[in-house]
Structure formats: structure tokens, C-alpha cells
Length: 432
Image 1 (cartoon, rainbow, N blue to C red):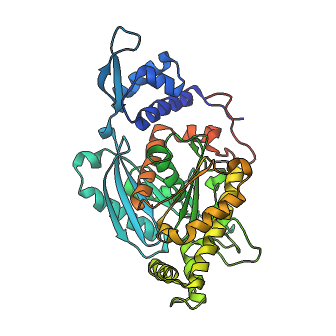
Image 2 (cartoon, helix red, strand yellow):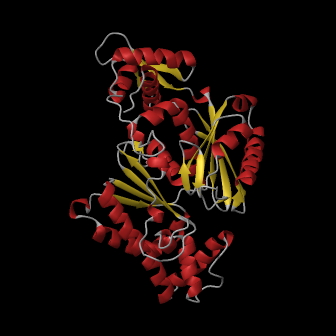
Image 3 (cartoon, rainbow, N blue to C red):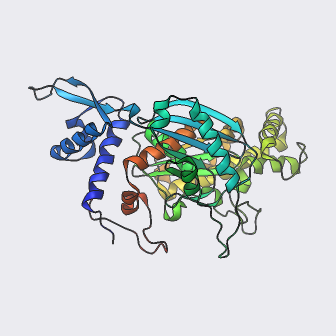
């Protein structure tokens, strides 16, 4: 069993203080920070002194003390203490966002790409575009860049910075049969700053849990519906990754034995029945829209909109395709809720451009699948925010890793990280 060393405990407590102040809508006093973190006032005082001396926190004012006497000093994150870049890599475009140390997004940029790419080509592309993006910023921003976060679809081992599989990459199988690319290491070397990589649905969940509708909600499921299907989980207030970062793969639950081929290498995955690509393929096969079974990603949204317009105009076959999509997604969303019991489910992604066609069936199927205690108690929200929020989540990942050292992340069981590569032992510190 792994135990946190005193240095790691101190680092974890620093993270707790920074996290509490960053997520607060208003400046906090030392007493409030103690209440939020559960740390003693003596511990908070010592941690605050270190954070103020290091420049991570600043004093922004004072308030009357509830107990009378001296006014209580108020503290906030120093936004310019460090800068981070968040990147969302999709099949059709890359979105880059610059965030300050408080998590505020200052500027964004988008550029089209034509995936899949080789890992080397993606590293060159990201390096060139991030450097070009930063050239437009002030010298203080470039000099204060503390790290880069990259969010992308697929099977991502975030602790080791490896891509095990992604539709964005052309991965070459190794001699042992495992395909993996050390993307974090390659980008870290190219950019000369730490680079962290994570599954994109996890990054959307992190952005929601830090700054969005899921803020201060302990258990949240964030489903992403785009070219593929994703799921990010916040459990007990923490992003849950599981062994090798492979938790929450809703897309690759097998719903039909020997079913449709999936790009991940399996058959019958849920994604092959409910994603953009799956819906468009069904429309092509039914003769409702033009194209082939392998519609290029750049053409998928156009084809999806055409199929949606047919459905809205009264075409029964087109309507059934979307209703079947909603029914399957709702059924498996309900099953996921029964298994994990989130109190909030957020459905995001540009799949919502046809939400009016599949959402009624989705809600009905989800309700039917839910156990009775969950019915009418789990909120489902369907909306689309744009790729900027995904990039903000990637920036949030960097802030989290800067605040909380990798050693602590790996040692604290609440992150769901196996300490042994064989996955047989999980560190569970007795206290943290």
C-alpha cells in the first residue's frame, strides 16, 4: 500500500487551497479557506504564506470580521502568475486557447486539419501552430508559459502521456501488439514546457466541474456526441480516470455481438450506432442522402444536416433513424446512471444540431432504463457550447497538474490511478 510522504501531503494541501480560491466566485478569507478545505487555521496560515510569497495568491482587500476585532484579509488567485495553453484536437480542426492562472480564457484560435495524421505530423503541426499563436501575445505571456494541455478523442493514458488509440492518429502497432505514442514527451521536447494529454471528454468534464454547470456538483456525467461518442465522469468531486485512464468508455460498450465494425478494432460498439458517422451511414444505406458508407469527416456534418432537414420535412425513414439514435443513447445513458449514480448528466457536442429529432426518444428511453429511485431525480441537460470550452478544459488540466504534483496524483486513490502497471495494486493512503 502506498502512503503519502509529508512533502506530498504538503503539496496536496497547497492544491486544496489553490483549488478552493480558484473556484470561488468571490475572494476568500483565511477562515473561509479553512472551512472549505477542512484544514486547520494553522495549516492554512502556513500554506497561505507560501502561496503569497510565491506569487500564486494576492491580497485583494479586507472585510469586517464576523467575530469583531481585526478585519479579515481577502485573497484571490493572481491571474498573471502563470499562463497555460489548452488545445482540443478533433478530426476536422484544432482549437487553441490561452488561459491565465485563474482559469480565464484570454484568446482562442482555430485551424482546419485533415485527420488522421501520423504522431510525428501532429507534433510538428501542434508545435508550429502553438508557437504561431503565442507570437501574437505579450513577451510576459510567452515567458510565463507554464504548460500545455492537449485534449483528444480516443484511449489516452494520461498518467504516462501516451495515446493508446485515437481516430486522430495513424498509430503503428508495436512488436508486442500494443499501439502507443508518447505524445506528451514528444510535445514537451518540441515546446520546451510540460505538456499533458487527456481524453477530450474528460477535459470537458473537468471544465464543467471547475467553471460550468457542474461546478460544486459531486457526481456528474458529461456525454459528448460528435463524430464519435465520449463520456467524462466526475465522481465524489474528482475527475475519474481509472486504470490507464480508460474509465468511462461509454462509446465502446458492446451492445451487439458481431455487430458493426468500430474504428477501435471491436465490433458492435455503441458509438457505431449513435455517432454522427453512424447516423449518416444509415441515411446513405437507406438511400435518403448521397454518399458512401465511409463518409469523410469534413462531409459528415453537411450530410447530417441534410438528413435532419429530411426528417423535419416529414420523411418517416429519416425520422426513424434519429429516433433509433435517441432510443439507444437514452437506454445506455440510463444504464450508466444506474451503475454510477450521477446527479447531473450533461450531453454536449455538435451532435445537438439534431437534438430536436432524437431528444424526445432519448429522454423516454433513459427514463424507462432508470431504476425507480433515480427517476425524476437525475437532471439531463442537452446543449452545445463550442470547442473553446474543451480547450479550456485542457488548460484546466495543466493548472491541476501544476497545482498538484504528479507524484501526489499517482499516490492518491481518489484519482483512480493504479500504481502498478499490472493494475493489481491500488494505492490507498490512510489519510490525505
